Image (tube, rainbow, N blue to C red; front, side):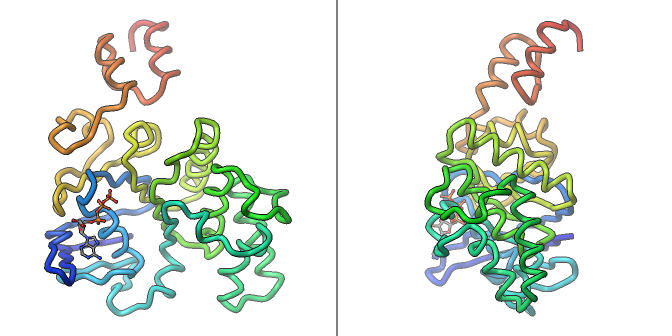
Length: 263
Ligand SMILES: Nc1ncnc2c1ncn2[C@@H]1O[C@H](COP(=O)(O)OP(=O)(O)OP(=O)(O)O)[C@@H](O)[C@H]1O
């Protein structure tokens, strides 16, 4: 479990970015949402120790982040940053994914096993010898996830994993996230994309001006007045409400309800 209690973060310039946030998560898919500057990145960086609480506590599987290094915590909480392609520096996909495990001092056999496993998890088998720069946007994003996965973290933080990707690439990333979740990883998805929240999240945490304004099931989240928080309802939900169907998670589900009549 990740346990955050009364988390405050005040930057050196006096900016109070987080004000008393409580949070817990296990192996769910949680979407972390909120308008620009609401504190999402500041919050997420506390979960692998990149930032330490000004006040309050953050514990990951019983480890207090103040007492452990980022290197130690990164084995538990993997962080895939936005636009990860800027972080690739090896000449092959294999070497890129092997970099983290190699730094752990593992044997060549173990490294290879981890790389194959991580590439399989994101459907990039057969890409081992490609250069990272030759990959498509969706493939790069999945490679970035594989690099973090190779450290075998229990929890994954994904910052805007589908932003800038076309429909097909985005679908491949969504599929990889679902697969990881089904294998027991807890996933914190930072995003502005409400369609993605609808499609993937079980639970939503909404930050507003550094405070937690909502924490609950996705259906309940979408019944909030999202404009008040600078957010938009997904088009699909606007349509489904207009035709009197209410909450649906996907276009096929909407069609099924419309064609099948009663739910
Ligand atoms: N290093 C820093 N020093 C001072 N203030 C900061 C620093 N980093 C962030 N802030 C401020 O803290 C607040 C929260 O920022 P944060 O990046 O956590 O928000 P966010 O929700 O992730 O925003 P976005 O959606 O734009 O990425 C903002 O007002 C921001 O300007």
